[in-house]
Structures are given as structure tokens and as C-alpha cells.
Image 1 (cartoon, one colour):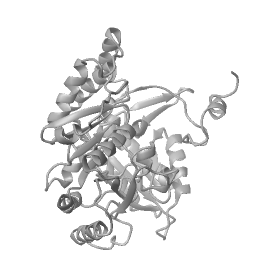
Image 2 (cartoon, rainbow, N blue to C red):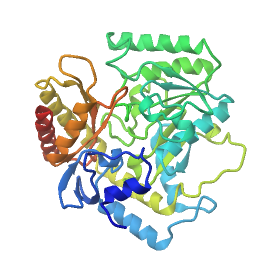
Image 3 (cartoon, one colour):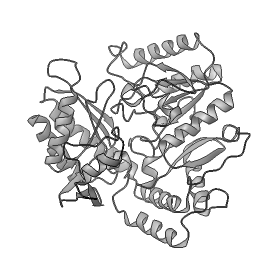
Length: 427
């Protein structure tokens, strides 16, 4: 077939399958924190395929594990014993903080959240779900129905009934003017009031740091306070760790640990970074919840030998090299540099984040009005400067999302911050 790859893409793929940039990139290979496009241009990657290349591109330990496993057997399904799957489940269960944990592997974060919703509704006998405003949990029929971000929710039809709670967006909304303690108290009061107006929900699903929503987060301890209220009703807490897990926030291995006062979540979902680009997702839950399904079930592709081998090698590398500590140190420096730029650029409303998750929210100068056109322009300018970043946000896509691989060096953080400084000042 003739024509550019972009033309061919548009001819056979859905219109809603969006691409970054006016002239979309074809990435051909990567190494470390860098990728190259089909024209031979080299970029510093500060988005990692949407926070998925967690450690590094072409990490030798992972590519070796994948190659060796693929040479033995690629696929068997969950109908047969699978040593890499058992070994990775053992490691994740031990790291989860959930007592008597069981692990079920999927192929994506969407599928992981879909499974968590299935478990919660079956266990509690309710199709009522609480979710956070500005949230994103995937693109399946059930996960779209609990997504509190209209830009990613294409239908109101749903197998679930969802109510949305205040609290995940600290600097906007009716409680933004309050101090942290008062903000938390107001959100807890709102939750109590909400619970008094309907049937008992099966679960609250929440991202500790909202990803697509623009790296927004509540004050530490808010979900612990929520958990105390939810426990009075038997309502479960699902922590969506698809973007926050594995130490990316620097301060904690799991995002929920910033809200741990009243114990761990009942269910944790994960995906993205654990496979370092391979299709790995999963659910961790207490045995009584995981085992509540009273019918047969399998997974054809979840927990495949090759993806499990990748996950094992990637997790071992992350732990052996203290990438959580690196995220805390280098991420802290990067956010400091971004805040120094923001102080001199009127279009930057806020720089927020934790570890190697940084969000830069853009507005029309002198206003609180989101500026998606500026975010798009900075994205293009950063690319011209040799840096790839992402974007997101709530009502409007006006937040730059910055989440490099967790092996990022100080020199690379300084380089990326300098490119962003120039891009923000230009736009």
C-alpha cells in the first residue's frame, strides 16, 4: 500500500484513536531514556509510552528474560501451571501490604480495573460504585462508567451506578480554598452525606495520584479518612495503582501508602510499568474477596510466560537498584527546576507532583481559565527541542504530564528541565 504511514493509519484505524503532534511520530527504537524516530531524530523520553517504560528502553535484563522465555514457550494459558506467573505473584503478594493476598494477572490496566469492579460487586452484592471526580480507570464498558472525566467517557450506558466524590483535585473545586485538614474534613463530610442518599455502594475506586486527570492528588491521609467511613458501611476500597505503583511517587512503593493510617486497600490494581512495555496488568485482593467468584474463569493471555518473565526481571531490577529512591531524589530535583521556571512564566498556574510524576497546569495568563491550546503548543515546542512529554487534565487538556523512566539521571533531568523552560517561555 502506498502513502505515508499517517495516511495509512487514518485509512484503517478508528478516527478516535488519537495521535500526538501535528506531524505524528513513528518511534523505531529506544535505549535507556532515549528514543529515535523514523527520520533518525533522537529524543529524551519523559513520558515512557504513558508511564509504561518504567525502568528503561531496551533494558538488557528484561530483553534477555523475554528472549530466553520466548525460546522455551511463549503461551500456555492459565489452564496449566506456569512457573513465572507463580513466582511473580509471590513477589507481588509479598510487596502488596494486603494480608493473605491473592494475585490475578490481566493484560492491561483497563482489564485489571474491570476485574476489580467485578470482584467488588460480586462480593458485596451491589452494583453501586463510588469514584472520584476527574478520574480515569480505562476504556472498557465498566471502567468507562466509573471514569469521572468526560473527555474519556463516550457513553452514559453502564452496568454500574456510579456517584462521584470530592477530594482528588486539591487546588480546584468548592473546597480548594481550605487548608489541608479542613479540606479533608469537608470531603469526608461530603462522603458521609452522599452515603446517606442511596443504597450501600460495593466499593470506592480511586487513583492515589490521578494520571489522565493531570497528576492531581488529595492531601495525604484523605483516603485513610474515607476508609474509616466506608468501613462503617462494609464498602470496599479499590486503589488504582496503574500509574502510581512500583515506587514512581518516590515517597512510597504504592500510592495508597500516603493514606495508610487505617490499613491497606481491600483491592489494588496495577499494570503499565511492571512489564516495562510488555502487556501486564493485575489485581491484588484479600483471599476472601478474590475467591468470591463462584463460577469457572480463566485468562487466555493474562499471565503469559513471556510477559511474566519480563515482569520478574523488571521488578528485580527496580528493587535491586532502588529506583524508588532515584524517583524521590531525581524527581524532587526535576520538580524544583520546573517550579523555578513556573515562577517566571505567567501561563503556568501550578506545578504539582510526586517523585517522577510531575504536572504543569497551563492557563490564560492572569486568569484561572485552562489553556489547552498552550499545552498543545508546549508539547510541540518540547518535541522540537528533543523532548517527549504527555498531556492531560480534567475539564480541558491543559496539563503537561512528565513521567520519565525511573532510571533517569540528574544530568537528564537537568537537560529535560532546560528544554521545558525554553518551550514554556516561547509559548
